[in-house]
Amino acid sequence: LFFKGIHGEALLCKSFYQIREAFDCGEKLVSKHCTNEASKDLIQLRKLMSDVAIEEGCPVEPPTNLEEILARPMAPVANPLPPGVPHATPLVPAVGCDPVEQKKFSDCVQPLTAFQPHPLAVIRQPKQIDEACKEFRVFSSCRANVNCRPLWAEGMSAMFEFACGQGYNTFVQVRQCVRKMTTREDIRECVSVFSRGAPQLACQSSNTLLSCALPVITEKCGTIAAQFITDYVDRFAKAIDPSCKIIAKSNG
Image (cartoon, rainbow, N blue to C red; front, top):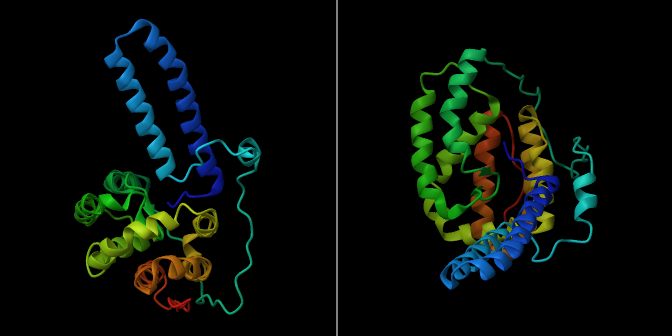
């Protein structure tokens, strides 16, 4: 669900760089064979693409080790838990779905996952929260008649329920800073580790995520933002494993 690993980010940025190169090449041809207005439009479009790349956290110039990052294997890497982080036992069993019901569920959830749910910033572009919340309500209604409840979807639903309900006003207040923090390399790595965790290990993964990300977010965005994220991630963990205890402290 949360594909935010460094490999995915590098691939995204490489795509932006290639598009920019194509614009640079096209600009010469347009300047030579087209009107000034067409040339200005192309330059403006290139600028918009560059702005999107920067907003997604891509460096202005390609990193010297970009190809080396892309060449890394994508197999999950074991990461030790910080000392004192518990995981509830027994672990939650995996539950499969009938293929027909799975297809119905996928059709229901696809419009919502198009917003790219994020374990810290709610969605990839927090400014779209109103549209995402509207889609979440559609999803909730749609899946009511579907006999398929993947564990990750239970967690995601609990997170949206909080972000679109009780936590909405706080999220609107802190979303800009939180979104900015998610472009930091250290926070991306926190999210990447979380993303590789199996849903059955939600409690363990959630505690690890908060222990990793909260100190920076508390320092840069304040305790209100840190408390929102703590409550938000807590909803995810407890929706999958009600016995989970979140021990991360929002005050760093």
